Image (cartoon, rainbow, N blue to C red; front, side):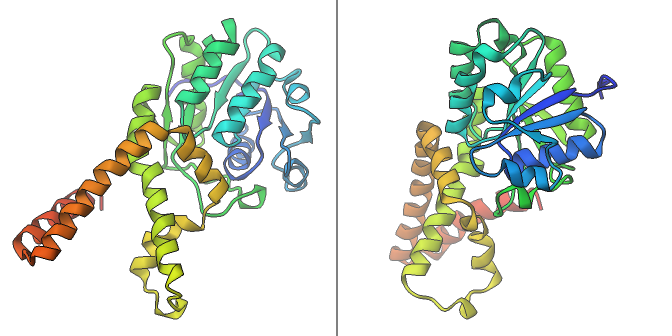
Length: 286
């Protein structure tokens, strides 16, 4: 594990004070990895201050960034892109900037277009953690413990910026991995983005048939747990990663067509083989 400076991330501007941003701030505070946190949000920054997640709130992203050492973009993907454009002219030399977005390439494109020399210290990151709950009330300082965090360093990045951010994540208990931004988006379309769409779709299909909740067992409850998440957030994620998500959808559709075909034919052996392919993969990480 790399060493972290005594002041950690110093004074932190947190742009987005919901579940993920609030949890990151809480973890930094628990482990003594920041001096203080300035929060900005269009909706819940005051509540985050009341909960002790941030020390003060700013009236604008530009005001939040002023005088800070680190900027953390913790809003939905499209909002993070807008925020990055707004703060570009407010950044100063040496500031570390990261985002916590579930999709990397849109934010990376804005960083390269708008940040100029500051792109050297913009290190994309994605904590693989969350909850169907949202808002600062859902923040949890332990949320990232023993969870993967994917860093997507850019070729332009300063090595010390990448090392510092990796060390901070490790200090709060996360397991740090690295993936190029485009590869991250391709893989997470398969393992997160499209599966969430499936959960929403399945829940809607069952709900339209007015199935009594008392009849729902743990299997369906587990499959649709993430359908209780924010539809606005997940629409933003899916629309920010359309190409890879639609490619994942096509692969899923192919598997489902094969299963339906085996059922229509009454071909038990083919059906078992198709189901076993999924079972083998799932058993591999139990």
